[in-house]
Image (cartoon, rainbow, N blue to C red; front, side):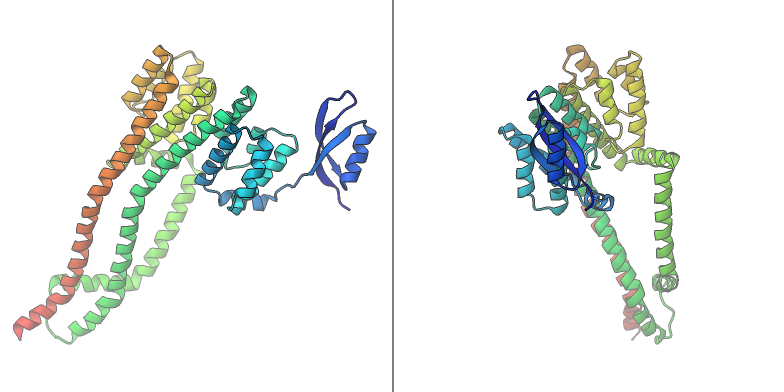
Length: 404
């Protein structure tokens, strides 16, 4: 029989609580080994290590909303006085999402094996440095329920902001994809049928009809190759952007300079940055250590580089507002002013949270305005394209009717 890993808890000869892990062929062998060490065993739990491929598959299928929901439920249970292990047991029994259920079960087993919650969380990709650091602070200070409540609020705000940005992109992209598909079907199947009819007329076709017929022939001949080339080029460029920091830096810089999307993304990154820093600073994390967790929260390389520069300047003794001024206009002037007021008044975390709320509202209002303006614009463009195709196809028939 192969050896397995077991976690145990018990009392030593002085009556002190002790715990640990041991490799054995069964629980009886664990009890025998502990008895030889004069340890009275009270609990034995087999450790199940999730296979790497299964852990990656589980983490890939976990959405941020699932982590947010788990955090909110765990905070509620702890605030109600439920012990941590029992809280995980309740979460596991009530969870219907298999990937999240497996994650909760794994965390439950690790904590039952004797390690702390933040150490167990650090072994799973869905939990970033911000999450683990706040949980560690909560465990040290005895305020785990409070920290989980702040984490749940932070994740809810971040999820709402992400959903707002996704809403702004999904509608125009979906309409454009459907429009391209419809136009391609018309050019490939409808126009050739009309072309055979026009050939029987024996008359010169209008220039618009000739353009549409030429475009149809080009799509039929080269359309497949163009689509494959576009997909291949997109895959290669995306891979290069992932591998090359210089390319990713240029892309993020270009996105921030885009006339309409640039200010929207800048405000979204600013909201995430200030919200995360406010959450960490309010939890008692030192400012320089908090900036370590804030670096990658925006998803923009320019903000990440600027955060590293700000952290370096803070270590040199400069204030946060002064360090923000040296980021070459990356952060809006309002952020600098609010940080300066917060440092002078001693309410930095409160003003950072207010700044985050302001820019979150800015993002929501901008998305609402864009949605209102984009809908008629897209309808006009689609009307012109479809109307132009219909006119090109029926114009020769109208001309033939006039001649007859």
